Image (cartoon, rainbow over all chains, first blue to last red; front, side, top):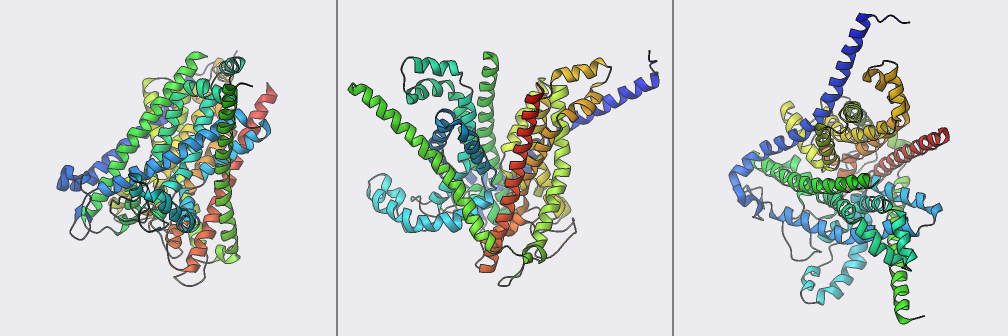
Amino acid sequence: MAIIDPRHAARQLFYEKLFRSATLAAAILVLVVLGGVALSLILGAWPALQHFGFAFITRSVWNPVSEHFGALAPIYGTVVTSVIAMTLAVPTAFGIALFLTELCPPVLKRPIGVAVELLAAVPSIIFGIWGLFVLAPVLQRHVQPWLIGTLGDIPWIGGLFQGPPYGIGIFTAGLVLAIMVLPFIAATMRDVFDTVPPMLKESGYGLGATTWEVIWNVVVPHSRIGMVGGIMLGLGRALGETMAVTFVIGNAHRISSSLLAPGTTISSAIANEFTEAVGDLYTASLIALGLLLFLITFIVIALAQWLLRRLEARAGGAR
Amino acid sequence: MSRRRLIRKARNGLFLASSVVATGVGLICLAAILWTLLSRGIAGLSWAVFTQMTPPPGSQGGLLNAIYGSAVMTALGILMGSPIGMLAGTYLAEYGRSSRLSVVIRFINDILLSAPSIIIGLFIYEVVVVRMGHFSAIAGAIALAVIAMPVSLRTTEDMLNLVPTGMKDASAALGAYPWRTVLSVVYPAARSGIVTGLLLAIARVSGETAPLLFTALNNQFWSTNLNAPMANLPVVIFQFALSPYKEWQDLAWTGALLITMTILVLSISARVILALMQSNQAAKR
C-alpha cells in the first residue's frame, strides 16, 4: 500500500489550481479580445462620430481634401454586392447540398465534398486576383454587353444594367463574392440535410413521392432553421470580405443606379485608403466605417449562431 | 401514365438536373481558379523566386523576402495564438463544459471565428501600431495570432470531446487530478486531432491579407527586424497584381500559386490525418 506523502498531495493540488487558472485565463481572453475590438473601434471612430454625428451614415459625400466624410456609398456597395452574392450563391449552394446528400453516387460523395471544402480554404486574395485578371475581362467582353443588350431595355429593372461594360464594378464584385461564399453555404446545408432522419424521408418515398417532393416537403421543412443559419453565416462572410472585393469593385465613392458601374464597399474602402489617410478625421472616419461593419456583421453572425445552436439543441433533444 | 404523374416526373427531373448543374458550376469554379494559378504561376517559377528579393518596378527579381516574412509572421502568430486557443479549448472541454460562462465563450468565439479579418487589422493597428508609433512585423504576427486563436479553440474543444469518457474516468480512479489526466491521458489520446487543428490554423492564417495591410505593411528589402515593417506574400501579391508592370504581375501570380498550394497541401494533410485517426478508432472498437 502506498503511503501518501502530504507534500506530494499539496503539490498536486497546486498544479491543479495552476492549470485550471491558466485554461480559465485563456478562455476569458477570448471575451477580452472581442471586448477590446469593440472598444478600440469605438475610441478610434469617436472623433469622426462626434464631428459628423448621425449624418455620417446618411451622407454619400467622401472628400478627403475638404474633410467631409459620409458612409452611405460604402454601405450601399456592401449591401448591394452581398445581395447579388446571396441571390446567386444560395440556390447554387442548395443544389450542391441536394446533390451531395440525395443524388451523388457514394463513391463520388467524399471527393466532391472535399473539393467543395477546399474551395472554401482558398484565400480571398486568390479570388481577387482571379476575378480581376480572368473573370472581369470575360464579363466585359461577353456577359455585360449581353446583359446591357437584353435586360437593359426592360422597363423598371433596365436601369440596373446601363452604361459601358467596365468589367469591374458592383456586379463583378457580387459575382466573385458569390463564388467565395458558395462553399460555406453548401457545406452547412449539406451537414444540415444529413441530420434529417432517414425514416422521415423513407416514409415520403413509401407514399410514392418523387425525390424532389421528398426534398421539398420533408427535407427542407425539417432543416429550415439550419438552412437559414448557414445562409446568414455566408452573408456575414460576404459583408466583411475585403481582398476579393477590393480587386474588382473599382473603388469609386459613388452610388450609381447601374449595377455594372464601379463602386466601393466598407471593407475595400478601408483596405485601399487606410495607409494613405492623412489627418485624424480621415483616419477616424475609416475606423468609423470599420465600426459600422463590425456592428452589421456581429448582428448577422450572432443571429446565424443562435439559429444553428437552436437546431443543435433540437437535434440533441430528439436523440 | 396520367398527365399529373408526367408533370411530377418532369418537375423531379428538372430540379434534380439543376442540382447536378449547380454542383458542376461549383467544381468548374475550383478547376478554373486552379488552372489559372497553375498556368500563370508555373511560368514564373524559377530558382530566382526563392533566391532573390522583390524587385523595383520594371526589373526581374524574386520573392525571397516575402516568403521569409510570411513564414516568420505565420510561425509567430501560430506560436502566440494557438496555445491560448488550445488552453481555452481545454477549459471548455474539461472544466467549463456547459456552464453559463462556457456557453458565452463558445458564442463569442464563433463570432471571432467569422468576424471580418480587416476588423482584426484595425484593432491591432489601434492597440499595437499606434502605441509603438510605427508598422512592424510583430504587429502583423499579433494580428495573425488573434485570427489563429479562435480556430485552435474550436478544433481543440471538438477533438478533446472525442476522447472517450472511460479513459478520463480510469485516470481519475487512479487518483489523478484533472490536470494530470488532461496532460497524460487526454492530450496524447487527442494528439492527431490537435495536430489537425494546428494545420488548419496555419492554413487559415497564411493566406490572410487584410489584417497585414496596416500592421506589418510591406518592405521591398530583406529585413529580419521584427520591430520594422516586413514583406509578406499576401500584401506583395496585392500590390504587385494591381501594378501596371508585367514583371510584378508575373511575380504576383507565382506568389499566388505558392500560397494556394501551401494551403491546399495543409488542408488535405489535415483531412488525411483526421481520416486515419477515425479509421484507427473504428479498428480499435
